[in-house]
Image (cartoon, rainbow, N blue to C red; front, side):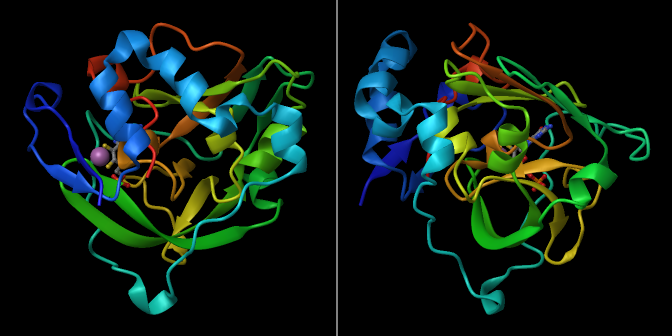
Length: 240
Ligand SMILES: Nc1nc2c(c(=O)[nH]1)N[C@H]1C(S)=C(S)[C@@H](COP(=O)(O)O)O[C@H]1N2
Ligand SMILES: [Mo]
């Protein structure tokens, strides 16, 4: 079993914990420190070297899901760094821009007309809790392909209505189980859980699962600021 320790200094005002089941890559990168980080990621993690076209043509292997009986309806704790933002879902638009040939701006009605995918997965928060949840939404890979990403795209930035932000590698972004979710456990997503639209994926830790996403920007390079928690020392890749 691999154990990862999130150093106490990285968790201001937060509970310290040991988290099991994280890949040894996470352990390695954690030990490397952030200056070597980008280099280590490029060399160690094969899917990061794959082109956006190859990833869109050949979806990665899905991770096993849980049966309906495993859903833990009360286990997902609301975890928001600041206030829940006020969003008018009628006026809401999701923008996808950056290094794309066809920037798009979609309403919730546009998004809900596209194929709905559901999955039952485990959400894992570094604060020491986890929850098996059913998410329903649209595959992010379908949205990204609508925007026609340029060949140089390697990362996606996610901007949220509460000022939160995060960034993902393109392989994880295009994983078939990375959804922009608008349902939780078969019901419309609640505002506290990120309505109208949030990230949900079984391959990343909870702090990568941005709620209230309004903008996705596809880029070829990571910028100095990588995410709300990542910029405070949390691991960037944060894979499960
Ligand atoms: N916009 C935004 N997204 C966010 C957060 C946040 O503070 N703001 N917190 C993250 C963390 S640490 C976790 S564990 C999950 C919690 O999701 P939930 O509140 O729906 O349980 O949201 C993630 N996404
Ligand atoms: Mo979290």
